Each structure stands twice: as C-alpha cells, then as structure tokens.
Length: 115
Length: 276
Image (cartoon, rainbow over all chains, first blue to last red):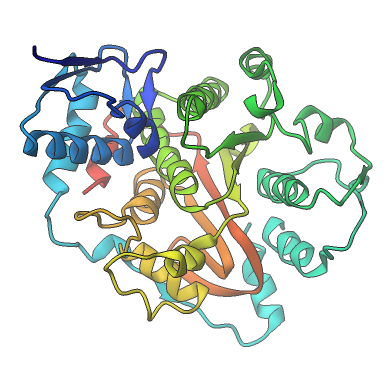
C-alpha cells in the first residue's frame, strides 16, 4: 500500500530557517509519495529554499515522488533562483572585503563614530 | 556613538559584577539593547539590575519578549504598532519539537510589525524579510547558543530604521574551529580571517553544495539594493559594509546592525536583482 505524506506547513505563512524545513520531513514510516502544499506560504527565505531543494533531491534519489503544490509566483521565483545558483561558480564582486588599519586609537574612535 | 559605547562597555565589563546600573540610559538604541539584554542573560550572577527607566521598561529590558517567558507575545507585540519601536525580542534556537514553528511565527509577527510601523511597500518588505531571515537563520544554525536577540527602532524624522541582532554563542571563528567535516579551515585562526572567509563564501555547513550565502548576500541586498549599511561584530572583527577592522576588544558571539533607509521607495525595485 502506497504511503502518501501530505505536508502543508500548518499555521505558518512563511518559512525562514533550515531547521523549520527539516522538522516537516522527519518521517517515521517509509513514504513513497510526498506532496508539499505551499498554499499558505507567502515567503520562503533563501536558506529555507536551499534546504527544501536538498531534501527534494535526497528524496527523489531514493525513488520518492515529491511534488510542490500551490506555489505563489514569489515563492516559485525564489525556488528558481536558488535552483539556478546551485553549482554556479562563485562571483567575486559582491564578496569584496577591505582590511583597514588605523594609525592610533583616536583615529579608530573617530571611525566608530559613524554609528 | 553606539559603536564607541559598545567598545567601552565591553572593555569595562567585569564578569564578577553583582549589580549593574542603567539609570543614565534614558534611551537605548537597538545595538546596545541587544548587547546588554544578551549580556545579562549570560551572567545570571548579576542579581541587581538597577535604574530601569520607563523606556527600558517599555522595551521589556532585560527579560525581553519571548514565548520562552510564557508571554502572550502576539497581543503584546500588536500593542506596539503605533510606536516607533518594539520590545526586545528573544527567540529560541532550539531545533526540536514545537520550537522551530513557534520561532517562525514569532519572527513572522515581528517582521510584520516592522512593516506596519514603517509602512514598507511589499517589494521592500520582501527584501528585508530575505536578509533578516538569513541573519536569524545564521544564529539558529551556527551560534550553538540557546537564544538570539532582536531589537528595532524607527527614526521617523531621520528617515531610517535600525534592526539589530545578537547572540552570545560561538561567533564565526568558533564556528570554523568547531567544524568537523571534510573542508579544511585550519588557516582560519583569528576573527578577521573568519569574517573575511565567511563573506567570501567558505561555509561550515555540512552540505555538498553550499557557498555560504548568508553574510555576503545580506550585505549586497542591504547596501546595493536598499542603500543601507551593514555592521557585523564578532570577536574583535568589525565589518562595516566592505571594511574590516580590529575592534580592539573581543565581543562574544555576534552582533549585527542593519540600517535601512525608509524613504524614496522605487516601484521597480526587485530583491531578486541582488541575489545570485
């Protein structure tokens, strides 16, 4: 008899963390089909989306049919962006860091005054 | 002069203290609110917390607003929607049982309160939700500490808001040192190298594919997308946007300040333009 698991993220309108995603996929029995219903989800963070795609990939590789249902355009866009970014080469531009050195403590204190 | 105050406060702190007096602090900006709230939580031997004036009392300092305190947090938070700030939020990082979903609901409500107070349009709210989610998830996944802290202040007349996050966990260097997987982080031996590595995407996550997005993309959305500023302090490493400096004194865990302009909203602004 096929075991079908239906996940609907009860009570949530957004998912922001990896562990929140993981908590919904703790199966105590063997499942053959997983339906994940995003009808109530308005926002998925990048981390949560990445975790979801990893879980989807793991389940699929074990022969589990997994389907995402009722995605809003925004949630779908996040899934597409994260999916495209997987395996992409690192882009250096936005990861730029400048190491600053100061002549003395007074100079550093003046620097800190910007906040 | 929040950063200077923070620097002096950390230098002067003595873990043997039994009493702390806040009578000179009529107003506490979010950076100092999360710093002192997390500090007092870590040192329960500080039995006497004196001089809590009306403002600190209103932001629920030092106990914070937290489901862990048994607070009716939803209705309490809703009562702040006409103000320019919310109580200091203390959220659990516990991954078991109901804790993740309670935290999700708490943070959703907090983000929604921030949106309503600042009247953010949807496209900007989504961008800010994105970056705050990345930063709170970093605390949940990496700090190895029981709680994270969040504070918010809207400076309406100056046209910007400050949102600050803190934890008193491992910090970035501790996370790299705690790592037990296949990647080699043996060259990361000080706080500034740890921050530099994190920005460049060297992640401690035990994932086959992970490029450590949290800090770099959060910074990009904030500085390039929203025109804001990103401040990140861990150990003695202080990152302000792209500039990394030696703070001169070690701060435990991590403290983050995101400063976001709340004006000149563009209808064509899309958060996804700043995400790789």
